[in-house]
Image (tube, rainbow, N blue to C red; front, top):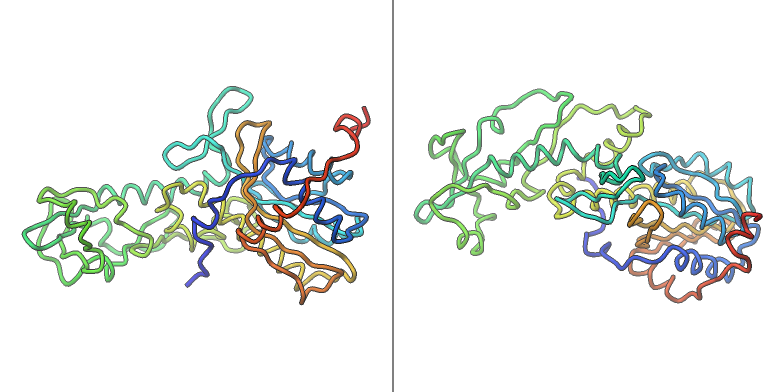
Length: 350
């Protein structure tokens, strides 16, 4: 059983302007005694993320070190190199998503004037699973017959097949239905619905004509099956492996693309925190890590939802502090907004 990520409601927080966010981070690290600070960032290699990197370096008066790959995959091994380039480290990262939502996918307008999914890499990982799930929600039917609630399950979901290269949905029939088949339907077999899914609200919404099960096909009622290469170093496969156990929850979300971005941010944040505390030998180094979801309003303008924080002082890994969504936002809210003493053009040498 995989460890459950934070609930969607905990991560549904107000976004923050980039310069406000960086200014509060700079005030925090200044008060904590950071010096010779190298800013480092892990994020997707999308053009919409470039302004974040530039402004982060501007606020800390030092060009930003890269810790990430496409899809906001973190490369922890780069952390050791970054530690040789600065005395202390402040790290920022996470996934991004287009601000315009349509059918559960975030979109952005590119410079060629096309509206496209963003983050495109995460959308590509998601698309097959989302299509398979949504097809099942339409093909599996539920209806009322007298005092009974019945479910018609197509044969394609009843026959066992070997694990292959394509995504398949596996129904947890012990949670969805009760007992043996009651009869034949037009596409499959008809069963009595499991009592735990027959709530008064469901009863009120059903009638004798079968209707798609829709959102009643909740995450605990199914899983996915697919042959995966767990040793692959190809980014899309690495992301898919990382998300696989969470895919039922992701596709059943009202905004699956955003949920995928949040879970990726959560996973990558804990990867870097674990690396710092378990594998990195950095005596006396101060490290502050902030992870969050970036909202791309345009390719030039982003806001960020802070979600997780990690703070290690003077290399004392056992005393490192972790901050959840509410705690990191409260910590940032307590800081003043640092304002760089030079303009961005002056910082750029113009």
